[in-house]
Image (cartoon, rainbow, N blue to C red; front, top):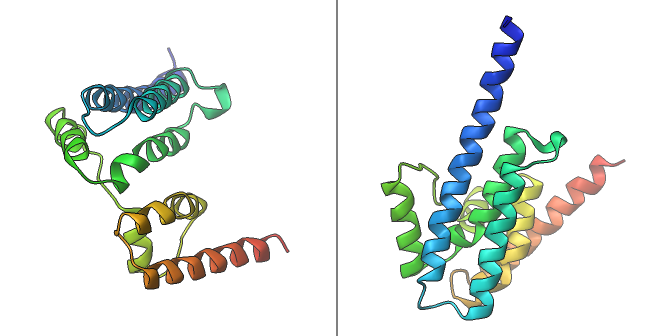
Length: 165
């Protein structure tokens, strides 16, 4: 077993360890969702299917997606709901992660973007687009902040357009 074989094994273990951490996170979320008093059946089913799909993509990736970066995207996508919402289920989820030694950080993309005054990448852009209406409806952001975010969305789109030229 040469150095290269050892080196590759190490890299795959890193992917595998991260995939297992994500799977553990999804299993914790599943328990919270199944026992949730605030989710209706349709939402519960959607979340359980979504978790199963993410878990499957993490554990059985297409060869080109067996990268730590791909796992990061899956993790970020999976955590959007848990990051952007509040309530007993959300608190329970984050405390269970902590109890299980999973050190994912709870982050609110919309607040981070407002604080920074710009959308830095496509993932933040998609997160803001996906969550702006709900955030306003729930009173997490006001009309002025919605205007500012919409302006930042426009600026981000403009930067993307200019990149292509």
